[in-house]
Length: 265
Image (cartoon, rainbow, N blue to C red; front, side):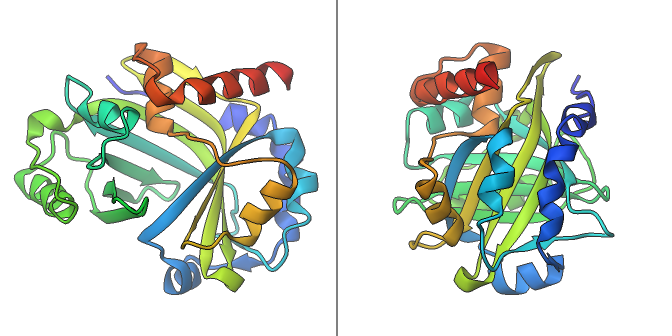
């Protein structure tokens, strides 16, 4: 049973520290999608203490914040699918070339999408999505969509047995449009994970991700100036390690970093 507790309380604890979000001009989802869809991109991820964000982000120039119905801090929920052997998890943890993720993502307005992501040999992420109706197990048509998306990356076909609920994540997100680089970036707060009733959360750490091309964005450069470097982090993987006690594989250093940041906040 996947019934994740609300992520709202953890985020509300830091809401007062997120007032800096309002200092940026707003931008519509349509404009971001027209100019920075980035369905094929290079993802760069960072973990940053929440307390650092106000001073760090006030130095970001020429950025705009996604605003939907007057809201900028938006709720996200993702249900990741994997098989009983945690194949998708281990493919990522062991740095296999043909690794992938399949998830059902639900947005604050209730819209839902089935999403497929895989990474190529040039470290580019390829993302495919289509509207979903909450159906589980996935229909034959949905599985065909998953397999046609994976086939573009040379990944073997999956069956319904390979696409069972593995872990659910919830968090709130601010999305930035970086027009100078035709890129986007996200900052995620209040991560909560639930795998078969076992829960894990991050209260004091923000996960920042830039989605761009080969060149660093202005936000990457700003983070580097503050001393932050790219971090291997996956909500899917970090959640499974801490809820299902899976081997840490390549995320051992990241786990120590997260534990340190949470403890020192």
